Picture 1 (spheres, helix red, strand yellow):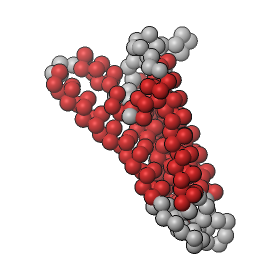
Picture 2 (cartoon, helix red, strand yellow):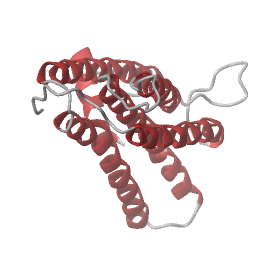
Picture 3 (cartoon, rainbow, N blue to C red):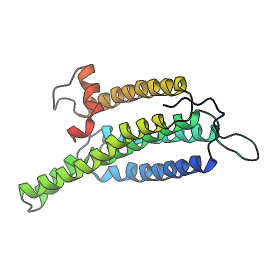
Length: 217
């Protein structure tokens, strides 16, 4: 987190590239929300045609909300002049929100895979080792993307941020608070979806599990 007392002026193309990523993420989330209706498992709710995959639905809807918040943060970081360079710390805040949105999109894709693969294995003549390899490969790939988006991306953004040390520390603390709050929400969704099937973890254990959630995919 370097100290920099010069006025921060970041090229608007840096922000535009991130807007492109957010646009793709919103499109992917929209596709997956509809696709979830065809997956096995979930909660059967009277009066609803499709089963509810609460954990994946919550992750994808949170990804959409985070992406929209990042969109606003990026837009307000740009000066309203003839050049339009980014001068406000909301650009880094948008980075952090964007990475959280990407992580939740990954979770919404890969978290339901376990049940889907088990259902697939039960209906085709596939060996146990083949199913295990497939499950492990997809979980590792999704888990790597999740960890990079949740931890590596934000750390790099904060370390390379041109804003003051105090601003970067404040953003880091805010990110950690938001991450823990989202982990608590995700743990609540997981508890509701698994109601009566497994023992419910305590508050602290539930949050800690969500901090490394790919390990449970």
